[in-house]
Image (tube, rainbow, N blue to C red):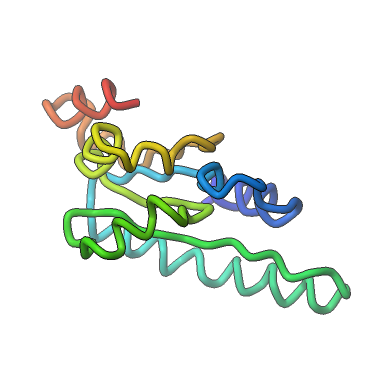
Length: 135
């Protein structure tokens, strides 16, 4: 959560990059699909708070978009992420690899921060080795 809050602060403080392909600046990798959905749900509250505080202070509302890319993501949504990447992308190690080995890798061109969660769950496994290579 601390890594996310620092990232949200940076994303909300400035405008998004002019180049759409560089919009995704935070990559969150979780070995568990269910955890990724929880993280997305848990980001809603801080994002709502940032928006409300911006309105209260008379500042422009920051538009911070969150996207999830997993094996369950519909093809149309996957294509949309390539042309209109979210500011924060939540994904699994396998989906990250698939993105990196396809034209979808262009959506990761602006990534500045990578957050690895539950890495101990895969560290000593083949999945962990695969994730290390992807990173």
